[in-house]
Image (tube, rainbow over the protein chains, first blue to last red):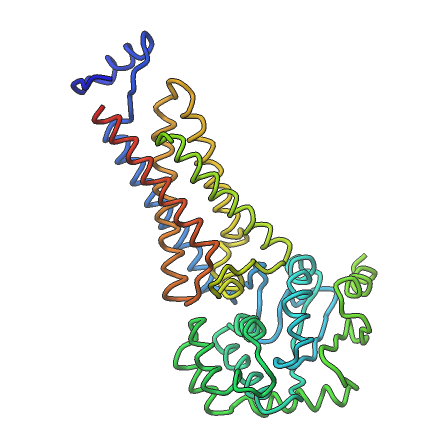
Length: 233
Length: 139
């Protein structure tokens, strides 16, 4: 179509009813729309950030978390997990079953999930346990928990050496406070106390789950459903 | 391929990836990694939600709307407001994916290739929309 000079809007509208005209929005309209777009995005970012600052951070499923506890405090079912962060079966549970549990039961307020350490595989289990507790100081317990299972390597192979744990924590944005915490071993006692408490409860394999205090034999999602569903009906 | 068809194509591709990420979110599955790590980290980060709404759902709704508007503009003589809406929506979406990419690079420090592909599709849709505006303005 031939180039033509810009015309008043009313004239262009009149012509549009008679013949096909490639009319576009004028600059004023576009400026107003652009301003609204910028304001809308700034508002969304502001709302998201203020929610993050005001409350414990949600996990991927929007679940409220506090240290080693995930889910609402008044949930009708409490699941306690005893696990070793170096244990491959625990990893399998964490990356395979736990996301389904989070979505179906924890995010919906039906289940409160508590993680306990059973750090029995070796020194790196203890350091990894201390690391997630240190992350908990910044409300990032579950972020690091998920990350450690995602990058889990061979047992006591250096994957969870303190230097590597600091690097992994840095990768998810945990800062200098985390490193100081890990170096101080301030959560060593908690990890060893958890481990002793688990052994006293008869935990001899990981992961072991207790559903409202009852030890669960089948830790698959089907086993969990079978244990949880009767308790929430 | 015309500019209008290209907007439909990139927005549809972005919609498909967003739909996959939404499925990953609600199914509790892990996103398929495609050579670069960081999928789980981004997926598990606090920034994957805005209130109770997963970011993947925001992407799905936004890109599906952009694709629908762009498809509407394939018809003869589409209303002017569709182009205005396309401009506003793709601008807002581009600003938002720019912010999310900043978070991935400098805060979460992990890159999710799926999210990056949605960001590229979104920015391409905006660039193509601006090109169409300029063509009309100049043509």
